[in-house]
Image (cartoon, rainbow, N blue to C red; front, side, top):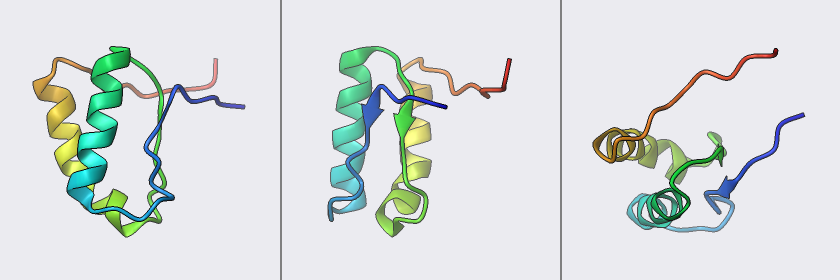
Length: 68
């Protein structure tokens, strides 16, 4: 079972740019966390490369989570 710290709220209709702004603001404010994204949403798929770039530029790391 996984929990998340931050929602992308991507079940709401919004542009990829609006979603990028929303989730980037949430991550920066929290300074860390597990983000819930729904890759079946076209806006999320379109936003993802920019989000990953923003995370890198902000000094965040994307890590691989494994069972332990």
